[in-house]
Amino acid sequence: MRVTLLGTGCPAVHPRRYGAATLLRSARGTILIDCGSGATQRLVSAGSSGRDLDAVLLTHLHSDHLVDLYQLILSSWHQGRDRPQRIYGPPGTRAHVDGLMALWREERELRIAHEKRPSIEALTVEVTEIAAGKTLEIAGVAVRVVPVDHRPIRHAYGFVFEEEGRKVAISGDTRYCPELIAAAGGADLLVHEVFIHREMKPVPGIRTAETIEATASYHTLSGEVGRVAGEAGAKALALTHFVPPEFDRPALLAEVRRAYRGPILIGEDLMTIDVAAGTAIHGETHIAFG
Image (cartoon, rainbow, N blue to C red; front, side, top):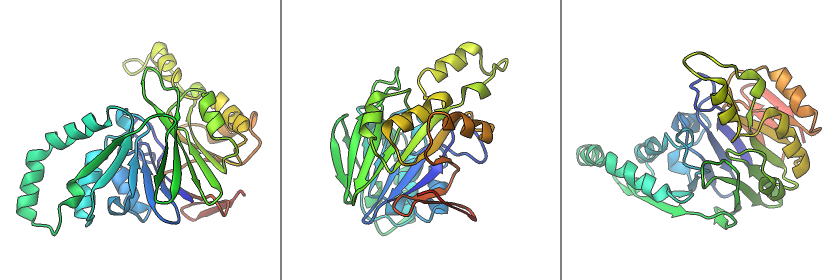
């Protein structure tokens, strides 16, 4: 399995860190996890597209994880997709997708009539609402749906992917979560969000101390994420969904290293991690960590 961090950012807009999205490529298929702002552009930059996807998995229904979903559906059609888009997500996903398709129906019908493309199958969306504890089979990959703690969001999931003896766990958005740690046990790679608390300062008119504490309360702090990886026995840790998107990298590494001695990757948009080879590539930089 290869994991590409398409977007490592958060709701704060940043020119180098796009919205939450991760691409998993297996021997037999391609899965997109979340579809935040700019995911469709990052897919193309990663050598893929919405045309290629076997499934889209949504961790939860926060806007920064799905705001590009309609763009994905439409751009897949433009890219020549000849089958429906399959979307898996928590309860509420079907209503969300139905609302999106209804909102853009008139514009879509005008495009269909005027552009006369060979197929409109890509504009059909098949939604499956999934429950925690279930295991899906997608393109030869076993996908376990893990409940995580992102309250007050009621339904929030992480995912564990297993194929040919390899295991990848993706946290989604969560505070410290024993269920995720158990499910990720022994993972070859844990991809985990991080809230860098010391970097967040009150800014008049933007955020108060109360805002910072409220946001921190449903994410995993930089002082905790190493503990998560260590308790899970993960063989490598890749950090993503950085809040805030700008931070002191050496300080973050040192903080996480205090609780986790395995390889730590500070994720960047379009970083690709080859789980079997134990390598990471970002631009011209090649890293061996396995």
